[in-house]
Amino acid sequence: MADAAARQLQYEYKANSNLVLQADVRLIERRSRDEATGEVMSLVGKLDGTRMGDRHQRTRPVKAAERKAKRQKRDEAQYDFTRMKGATLLSEGVDEMVGILYRPKTQETRQTYEVLLSFIQEALGDQPRDILCGAADEVLAVLKNDRLKEREKKRETEALLGPLAEERFALLVNLGKKITDFGTEEKTQTTDENIDETYGINVQFEESEEEDDEDMYGEVREDEDEEEGEEARFDRSIHAENLGGVEEMKKEKALHPLDIDAYWLQRCLSKIYNDAMVSQAKAAEVLSVLRDAGDDRDFLYCTLLASSQSEPERQKIRDKMNEDSSLSRILRQLDTGKGEDDGGGEEGAMRRENRRKDQAEEGGDGVGGQVAGSRQLIDLEDLAFTQGSHLMANKRCQLPDGSFRKQRKGYEEVHVPALKPKPFAPDETLYAVDKLPKYVQPAFEDVKSLNRIQSRLYKTALDSDENLLLCAPTGAGKTNVALLCMLREIGKHINSDGTINTDEFKIIYVAPMRSLVQEMVGNFGKRLSTYNLTVSELTGDHQLTREQIQATQVIVCTPEKWDIITRKGGEKTFTQLVRLIVIVSI
Image (cartoon, rainbow, N blue to C red; front, top):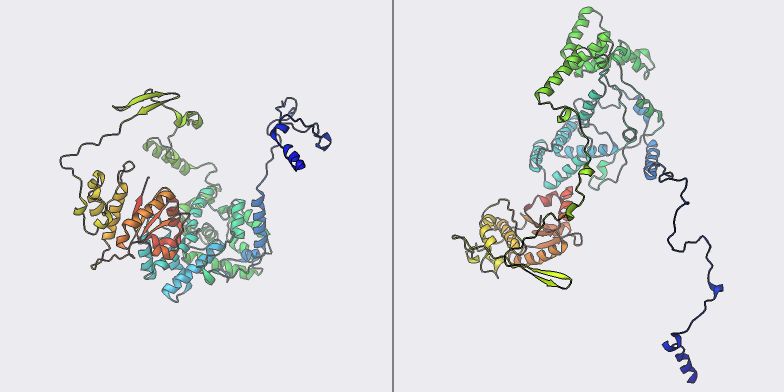
């Protein structure tokens, strides 16, 4: 017992308070002289000969280069450039359909286009491919028209394909969104006309390396949607053996009209067909096709002009070219041997003079609507307000009548009296709940009369479908005004037996915060329970399945969630049932 008591006394505070212990240096790890001690030290003399940015190196993104290399390696095993290089206008593999506006450019759009053709074939029945492609052009033109509303697009589409269910039309809209290269031919043609003003013929134009890689190798294919199914899969058995074709196409330059003589087309075809008789026959067929198709290409008229056998025939071709402005430009280049920009010319000077006159008539505006004359660069950072929102421009703070201050130790109290309500107008009264329609009264069981704001707005909320903007402080009764608008929409769908047709409408209540969403769900759920309506929460923490959304009439959500829902193409059938949207705290 004595030993135990002695051991306990060793740990008492009195025994250890003044105890000094010596550390065993052998057990402490020795620090090196260069090791940092944590003290502030000067860098004078340690950065001589170096400047900030001396070790800067410019590098390329590694992931982008690796992704590009993988894409090229994968597609080199799938594409056959020799087949593309040998394809001509008269080859068997070339689609001979005339009048088709849209032709897919990438693998993704080809897959989607095949699914679209299958969709149209189900609607129109067994039809030739040119009819299906023509119908696809019309459908895509309607779907890509931003000026048309959703109902107008559906009406135009049903005029082409017949009646369509909401799900089928939503699928068609999704297919149209996946076709991203529709309408690019016109943009490319406009760009081509502006690129080569010297020679007027843009046989082959150069693009950026990234665009060429995407066009020649195809875009990166993502996972197909489940709805495309097996119809979206097509034969990708194309092999790559000749990668030099890409470089050859890049090196092609614009062609001058003087280079096109009577045998230019035959020489081009002789590179593909070894037999001279075959190349001559193909050249005649190409000219015949171009002439009959009405495609006024530059090299066609240059060839016809060079191969004319008599002067009347030559003059007839020249007269026809003079009638067209684009062909007259080619004829002028043939006569002068120069491009449009080589020395200008009288017509170019006239165009410049007319352009200057037009600008003078428009009030001196230059190209793009900018004012002609000297331009001055503005430093936006110099004009920025340095103090931002922290500036208090008021010298004094004028308090309302009845306010007073109290000086406390370290702070000051300012007491501002509550605002007195404005007196009622002679014809202003609070509207009693008993005077409301009978189907509205169950939602206001604990309320005898509406307040001033609700009494002023109840006619607009209950008797009209006008848009309503209410600006009022907290506690002013904005929620009851929103409830009156909901009851207005509910009253439209009451059957003769008193029941409510819950499948015909949806009401969206957008609240700024999740906590407010939960509060509104409890409030509306309690007050609308007598109508057998379902109120649900839709936020990032609380998701709803498609069946739950169908069974819900009032959905309370956050702005972010509603934005996500409206961007999804598969939710079109749900959003089309929305009849009322209430947005809180804009």
